[in-house]
Structures are given as C-alpha cells and as structure tokens.
Length: 186
Image (cartoon, rainbow, N blue to C red; front, top):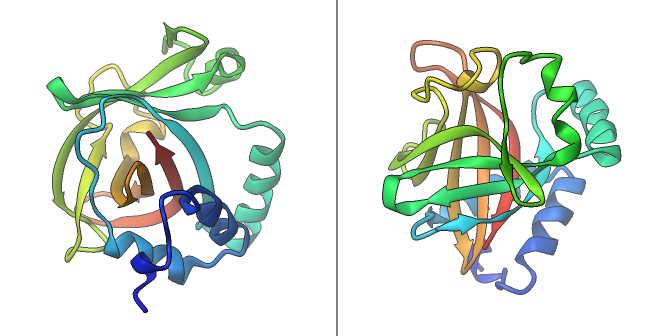
C-alpha cells in the first residue's frame, strides 16, 4: 500500500508528530516525495517543527530547546504576490535581537511577522523528481544574511490542508542539505 493512501486529512497532523518523534526519516521522505506542490495557500497557517535532521547530538539538544520554547508558529502566504513571511510568538522579539540586532519584526495581530520570502514551483533540490513550492528567503533584501538567507524551504501537500516541508541549508553553488522537517496546516 502506498504511504499517501495510508494517511487521511484528519490524522495527518498527528502522523507528522509521531513520525518526527520516532525520527522515521524514511517515511517522512516517502511522504514528501508523494506530495504535490502546495498551491493556493493564502493567509496564515499553523506550523509545527516535525524533527531536526542535522546530527543526532544537535537534534536531541535542539528538540529539548524547542520543546521548552518554540517561537515559530507558522507561515503567512500572500498568493497574489507569490510571497509571505514567518509567524513568530511575541516572545521571540527580544531573543532575536541577539543574532540580528538591527532586524525589525512587524506586528501581525497576536503574533510577529518576520523573515519574508518569495514562492515559486520547481523540482526539489534533494528530490529532483518531485515538484515543490519553494519558499526562498535569499532574494529578500531585508532578511538578515546570518542564517536566514542560507535557508530554502520546500513544501508539498500530502493531504488536503496538510503540508509537509523540508528546511534545507544552502552550502553555496548548488549544494543543499536537509536540516529539518516541518509541517503547516491551513
């Protein structure tokens, strides 16, 4: 049975959480490859970090930190302009000044908006046989050079309203590595 057939819209979010907790990277990768480019997302989404994929020691440390405090809350898409931004908890404002002292976040109701991006569809960098919605931070002049411009997110829809994403780290030229899986729901 195909992985995409075993997951329904109602249990997708829970399934992402379970796969991340189990570090089942093979199933996450298969789910990602069976998805289609996320399309038609407009407005805010709810986000969850599924799991880090950097190195077991880093991943455990990062999971503890983000388990205690996760400032990232999702993304907001502006489909008319193929753009968007990240939604952060208000508690992220002051800690973000340490790495990015001159960067200014914007008010977004009960959250903050930051780290704008542009979107387009193309083959995935690590999955060239899978078309993805690229979330690209590099071309946005206001984004900090430190960390943010090296990130490329790729997003696919695996069930209606349930999106699985890969956070890729850009090493220069056309080299990327997988840093984390995340999920969005509309």
